[in-house]
Length: 225
Image 1 (cartoon, rainbow, N blue to C red):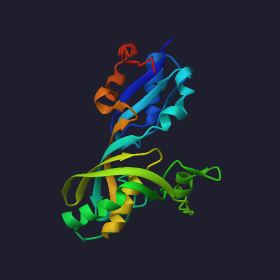
Image 2: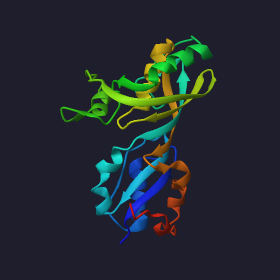
Image 3: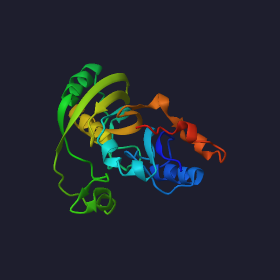
């Protein structure tokens, strides 16, 4: 029976559930999970756990730190803090590069972050995004996360950053908070997970390969973990 870890580069527009379905069809096994989901618009590393021996260890993999490349769209806020949300406000303010560099200093080291309403986080047994979709917003407790944020490029309205972070970090919330600090607002328009724990994007199998019914995944399974 197939078992192990399979590294997949998730395609934009797909879902984590879609990857699980594709793998079940190819491997003929039901016990398949993952170590951290990605939103449909996002791409990059998905650590897929194949077989009961590995799905039982999901908490071990979920606790890993992660690294992302993110594109922020300045001047536009959305209710979900990302490109899939409804626009809530717009601004014509154009921050300077120096203002951005100064603002990014607040997103280094230990940072307090409030989870977004559009998230799978549960409060009193209810997922926040279920409440958000009903137009309900509730108070959320802030959490401490560890960040290392690097400026990659800036050409208004797009700002590209790289973020190494601890578990539980919401890059959408970081985008929103940075936009608020700059005074222009912002949302997350693109996201790629570059690393999950020790697993790197360059070692991932492209999700498009899973559409091939003859794709042999056995050579790509990491078993001695």
